[in-house]
Amino acid sequence: MKTYKPNDFNHKCQIGRLKTETTSTGGKIEKFDENTAHEVWFASKLRTIALQFQLLGTQYEDTFEIVVRHQSWLREKLVVKFKGELYSILNISSDETSKIQRFDIITLRKKTKGK
Image (cartoon, rainbow, N blue to C red):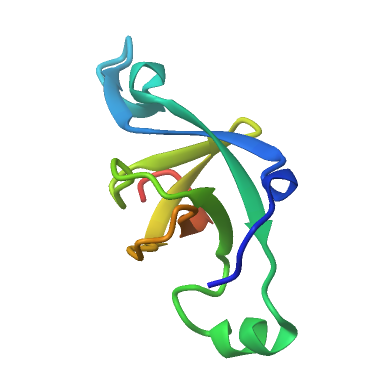
């Protein structure tokens, strides 16, 4: 796995859970639960053109990846909030080696209503 430098982690996001709230009309709406949020610095992971073409027509076509320091609490059922937008975690590639510096690669897709 590629080694990342500390200055690569130059973006900040929040990772947490969604909570369901009832609206005044009786409907249900999902919102990001600030009480469960962890603030995390991340690095952007670039994809090659060849990989982008391989992903066309798959469930990963409209996704992107970020890299965070290894977190044992990180699970796929969580969501990521970045620049006011919510993103679903599709996959986490955890670094389970015995290295001191370990990184997890998280595949994200912009969360749309009802998904």
